[in-house]
Image (cartoon, rainbow, N blue to C red; front, side, top):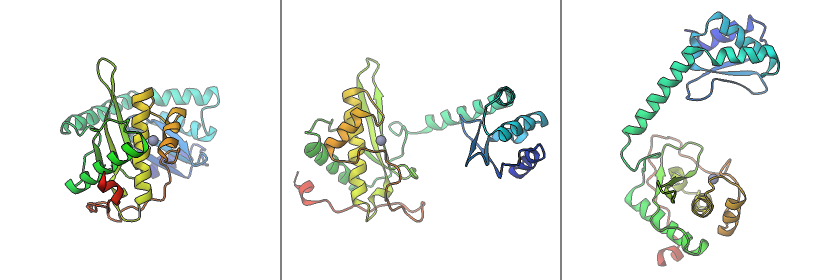
Length: 255
Ligand SMILES: [Zn+2]
C-alpha cells in the first residue's frame, strides 16, 4: 500500500516534477484529476495498490497536465480500465446504497434536527412567504427540515416524480446554522431560493438555476444566483446542536 508521499515520490522519480502533492480520494465516481494548475494530483484511493506500470501512466498524465496526446490518452485508458478500480467502485456504491436503505423512511437525504419550536418557525416562515411572495401558489404541506450535516451547502429542494409523471417535492432542507443569530437575511434568502426551486420544479420541471428559476427568484425577491459564498456564520463546534429559534416578525405571527 502506497502512502501519498510514496506515490508522490514514485511519480517524481518518473519525471513528473510539477506535482507538489498527491491526494487520495475515496469516492464513487472520480478516478483521478489534476487541480491547482496541474500541481495537485487527486487519485482514487484504490490506487494505493497501483503497480509500477500504473505509476508510469500517472506520471505521463501529470507531465502532460491533462489528456492531450495519444500517449496520455492511452495512459488514461490504462488507469481507468484497471480491474481493481471497478471492484473498489462497486464496493463503495454498495456501501452507499446500504447506508441509504438504513435510513428511516422520510429521511431520504437529510436527517431533520429541528426542535418542535424550530419546525413551527420554519412552517410559519414558509407559509408567510408562500402567501406574500408566491401568491399562495406553492403546496402548503412541503416539509421544511433542518440539516446539521450540510457543511458549506445552505439548502436544497428535493424534487420527485410519481409513476404517472406527476411532479412533487419531497422536502426543503436548510442548513441548521442558518438559525444562528446574525444569519437572518441569508436564512430568508435561502428559504426563498429553495421555494423558487419548488415553484420552478412543479411548474416547468426544471431543477437548476436556469431562466425559469431566475424568473421565480426575482419574483420572490431573493438573489437570482446560486447559494455560493454567502456571508453566513457557522457554528464553531459542529458537534454542538443549534436549538435557537429566531424571533418571528409580527407580520408572520399574525398570518
Ligand atoms: Zn439552488
